[in-house]
Amino acid sequence: MAELKINGERLWASLMEMGKIGATPKGGVCRLTLTDLDRQGRDLFVRWCEEAGCMVKVDQMGNIFARRPGKNNALPPVGTGSHLDSQPTGGRFDGVYGVLAGLEVLRTLNDLGIETERPVEASVWTNEEGSRFAPAMIGSGVYAGVFSLAYGHSRTDPAGKTIGEELARIGYLGNEPMGNRPVHAFFETHIEQGPILEAEGQTIGIVTDAQGQRWYELTLTGQESHAGPTPMPVRRDALLGAARVIEFVNEIGLAHAPNAVATVGMINAYPNSRNVIPGSCFLTVDFRNPDDADLKRMDAELKAGVARIAEQSRLEADLKQIFRYDCVHFNESCVGVVRAGAKKHGYVTRDIVSGAGHDACYMSQVTPTAMIFVPCIGGISHNEIEDARPEWIEAGGNVLLHAMLTKANEVSEVQPAAATALA
Ligand code: HGY
Ligand code: MN
Ligand code: MN
Image 1 (cartoon, rainbow, N blue to C red):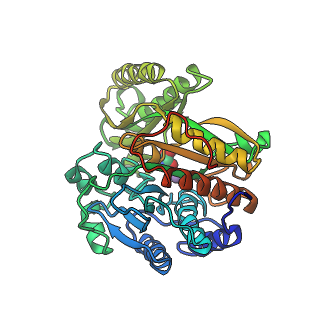
Image 2: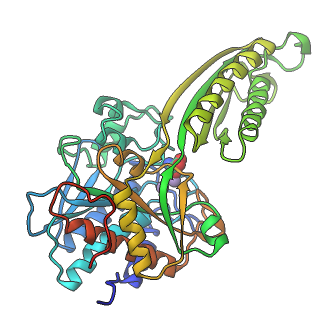
């Protein structure tokens, strides 16, 4: 039997259509979580799903679920999804690809008149990026029980707006209770956001694991004083202390090579006036490592280093860890189904560990989960020039179709040890 395929042109067209919402001059998108642009993107997705005959529900964290009925709707569905929110200088594929690949599977099943045993469901997860509201992956995190609903609603953006308020404002404060939507298996399709697949000429990344992450917020406090009369030896310069911390964070990343990564992404000096010695400085630290024990060592080094630098610089330091999850090992049965799908289509593949965080990382805590990666041009992402080739986008959709069909026709709740491809 010829392997079933999605309509790659339709998927690409949907991606380009969604990319018009929040489009930026360099060809990317700025569609920050729960802004009016995010609402527009959500509304478009919901309209497309309703046009495809899906029943759409929204939960208390604004996560969206578009369900296509199966023969036995008492069975938990097979789910797929990702996020529509972007970074400030985001691309047209990060997250959106996984959302619209899921919609494309539903559309293809309609085209082919296929009735699956289980329902299948495409989903959108709130605040995956963690840019406007920290931390990341809050919608899937509350769904998976990692965060409470109250915590999820309470997170504020720099302007002091909360997620709960903004969900209500854009009309996505749903009433589906959190976490009572069991799922038989979950797949997320995503661009790799790194250089490996393209550089090695692979079409599909079989994502076996995702590296662990720890996010920190650091406030250094010294004393504002006049940039002119204040002698160097008596200054308590918070921005100078921050510069030393930034250098030190980079040293930690290099010292734990080859796998560790360490980033200071945000810095705010106060009062940020050119002739005032900064009295305080806020900065963020993002650590990642595919080895939990090594990530823990990085954590200890950061804490010791910040204390040392603060003392040397005569500053107070308030270092808080605001986000953490350990390395994720995806479900062998679901990974096996992804691998079988790629093989059936004859795609060149390699196993890969995800360097980025994804909603699938939290979904894997509550249901068997796997991811499908496709290359992106130059491995560039979280950048407006993010791009991919249509054939990659189609290939990931074809593997997702295979994976979801295989799992949607499993009537037993028990996951086979390593599911084989559809006969
Ligand atoms: O930070 C991440 O890995 C993801 O883009 N939220
Ligand atoms: Mn993403
Ligand atoms: Mn991202």
